[in-house]
Image 1 (cartoon, rainbow, N blue to C red):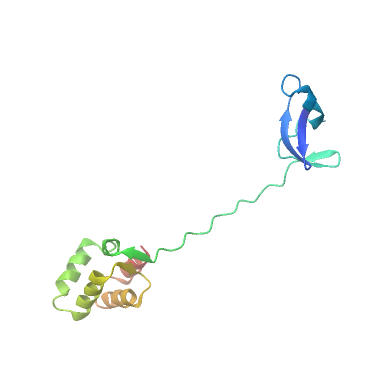
Image 2: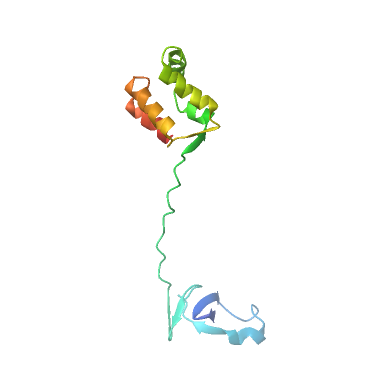
Length: 140
């Protein structure tokens, strides 16, 4: 059994089992007989029809890292225990006080800024957060 295909620019765009009752007789000339295996997308090369070459899946690029967050989102990266310890240290440690003041004054927090980088390094060096927690806070 044969099928009928409409071929445009050597590419099969439509395949029908029969033309009778499906396509107006005036349009029958736009279709050619093809082997049963031919499907839309096949390419006509001479007298043969070949399946199109498979398209390699392309992985989407990784999302851009988030480097700016709101103050609230930044503070939520700390555990409750860490936040409470920082607020308690604010009265006795001028560096912690300055870090928290800078956060209070900022509209949002740039995780790559010197203030944040130096502040987190200080918190790590003074035991307020571990190096692992500091990295997690920076990366989200």
